Length: 440
Image 1 (cartoon, one colour):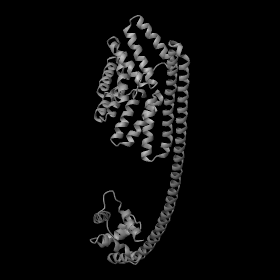
Image 2 (cartoon, rainbow, N blue to C red; image 1 turned 180 degrees about the vertical axis):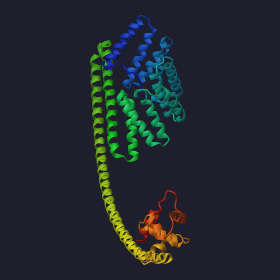
Image 3 (tube, rainbow, N blue to C red; image 1 turned 90 degrees about the vertical axis):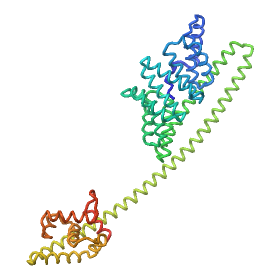
Image 4 (cartoon, one colour; image 1 turned 30 degrees about the vertical axis):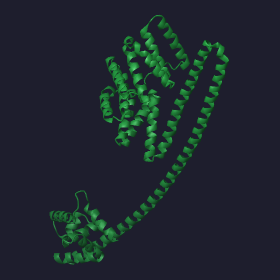
């Protein structure tokens, strides 16, 4: 979820907690209830960043007696933090929903569109985690007017939630596009929690779609970001442990040596465990990288083999087409010579048509038989026209050979298409050429 509150990162966590403790003591000395409540909230936020869940709940519980004294911004921060903690731990979902709605309402009352939009995104993610996708979609629609035309920082939480909804609905491509937008926006606006979640979902989709190159890029990035956050939290936890130990040493000097020994032992155990975990992760990552490399190599080899087969197929097709074109050109030249001979002979029209029909039958006796087999009702005139089309004659040449007008030729062509049951988008020339190819 998008937390959207953070402490001053120029200070270490222990220094920040120390400053909060000093401020709280001052507020308690002056009976400043608003200041005391604000100190509890800030301490909860710092502990949340360190992953100290139980301590966060403890601090937020201490805020409750001071809620009536807090200003709108502090109330908004409290309700958001409480809702997020309940959601992250899976506790009291109804209370989490109610608190998040209060945070949204307070944000709108303050005209703080950014915080309201972020909390709407958090509410949508809360619904998604509960499996209430219909409510999540409604919340995202409500959120849209507040984020439309805004910078990417307003959009990252919305993109992530839309991605989860699309993934649930089986719209994998839309989900991937929204996770990509979320990832890019989270990088720009420094939202590590959403950056990690988005790149994790991208890697998962890459794996499901078999896109191993993208997976090989996104999964290591997810591991890197996750380890970075976990490492930072581990360091902060160690720093907190050191700070608390130091305070206890100041209060209980007589147990100083014993507590120092315990601290060293704890640190040794933590470091040993950290090294073991790190070594295990390195071994695991190495195995994964080897597997990715093997799969990538196999994919490249398969692609090269496919390209080789496609090249051979293309060469065979070109050779086939070249042979067919040469054959048709020879047939057309032969037809033209014999037609010229018939015209010079001064034969009558009917005799020329019969001579031409016999000429076509001699050139390809199986063509007419194949047409009659496919369409038993086809007429002799339609077969002659099909034969002329087959050898590549144009409309004027066909009209001259068949001794008919252009309109009659158009009618004959229409009847031939109808006889062959051709659709409007089918080419008559391609169909007739295909008959010739099948016969060969």
